[in-house]
Image (cartoon, rainbow, N blue to C red; front, side):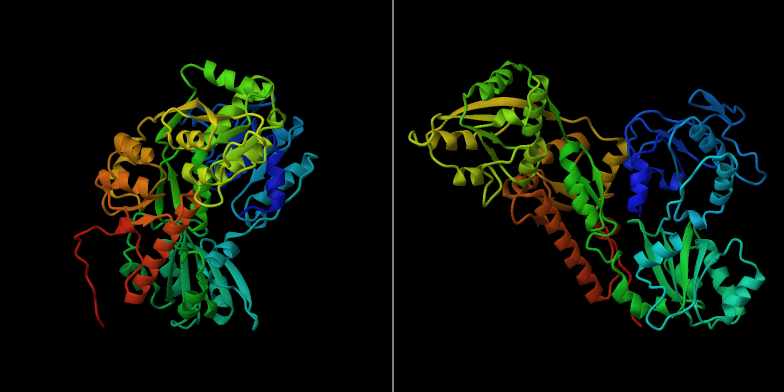
Amino acid sequence: MLTLRAVEALATADVLIAEPDVLDVVRGHTRAGVTVWDTAADRAEAPVQGEADLGAATSEGRPAGTPQPAVIDGRAVDGASKTAGVPALRDAAHLVMAAAQGGRRVVRAVVGDPGFDTCAAEEMLVCAAGGVPFEVVPGVATAVGVPAYAGVPLRDAQGADVRIIDARTAGERCWMELGASDGTAVVSATLDTVAQMASELVSAGRKPDTPLTVTVAGTTTRQRTWTATLGTIAQTLKQAKVLPSADGGRPVIAVVGERSAAAQRDRLSWFESKPLFGWKVLVPRTKEQAASLSDQLRSYGAVPHEVPTIAVEPPRTPQQMERAVKGLVTGRYEWIAFTSVNAVKAVREKFEEYGLDARAFAGIKVAAVGEQTAEALIAFGVKPDLVPSGEQSAAGLLEDWPPYDPVFDPIDRVFLPRADIATETLVAGLIELGWEVDDVTAYRTVRASPPPAETREAIKGGGFDAVLFTSSSTVRNLVGIAGKPHNVTVIACIGPATAKTAQEHGLRVDVMAPEPSVLKLAEALADFGAGRRDAAVEAGDPVTRPSERRPGARRRRTTT
């Protein structure tokens, strides 16, 4: 959760020095060419030059015992901390000073809010002593953000004292003060110390029936919250099979007080009750096409995993495409029809190759097969004259396409840049309407390389909760490069033709979009997830993801 000011600062940074827990988020807002430093506590890392890639490692660690200074603006910088008890690189002041004194703009990114960071003040003092001006950009502290995402308000109309405590450093006096208070306590702890924290508060005077929530991985789609009391939290975590566990050291935010009561949280838990919360959804499309669909899935709480099944390549013989683009300029065509985002991209790249821009479309009518293709044209600077009013497909486009009229149409020719494997529906329909069609291969679609072995195993072994198929080719190609999805995986298809192909490959189709749109497909999957969740709640069953339940598995039910 970044503030607008933080995004502005990141966009102008020459050097980014970030905590590993936030690096993958903040680097996505930096410009190309930024130098990135990961402040991993167990190693000094070399800066990475060039455009950051979300989710990728930013640097390479060095073997232990072989310290090697980093170089910023030609100056060697020893990243290791010189302060006793502070992990290597944790202070980061050496890096900040070297880059800033070299005339570069530095952004230092920490977890949560800088005011709660134990070392941020020390780093700022070093800057002040060195005459380096700095700005502090407030952020959202985890002690505030996590309860908000867990549906636990810290204050209400009646008001209350709110105390934020770090269990690792809290002393006996702190626990005694909390025990004597009836205010809300927000405690940073770990899974395996929560029970001890609760016991400390009960010993200090808090009632054992005081409500308590414990949230792990807060504000992420891995978030999980348990509601209990100070007296029952240990048993609750044990029954949930959370503890004992090797993950007991994971950080948590615990909220102690009446505002974390179970009845209240059931009504306020907005994040974990999203229809696809935590679902791992496979999006088998080209990288460019997957972006908008993945964004929509995230809004429903899902975790999209993009696996390209189709690679887009230039045509084997570019001469036909070159003649058609020149024909656009010389007035050969009355219409140009785009049937995909890739077709827009192919024409745009050819325009740029010839030094042309959107002005070359002057006097030519432009058609787009659907909203996404229309958006790609608008981004190019071209507003389409025709977008289907009904079904977003070749058939829908033909329904709205006007027949050729020699009185009103001075030219009878249509330029149709398409994939090499496109169907003939649109060509045949345009000819029937009286138009001459130049059906040109603008790009080729080929099967992509197989995904990593881990992804293939997850597909076949039921590691994904759902798969979205947006065309028949994505069905064929995914099965071809990665295998058939497990039968616990929810299969969602964009339309009848895609569903038929899925069924031919032995897949059970659970969801079908009401109209052929990727956003409608995501919406249909969300409706399916919401219905599944509601049914579980109504039956008194725990809400699980499809990947958490296997066919034929014996379920134990306890009645009290």
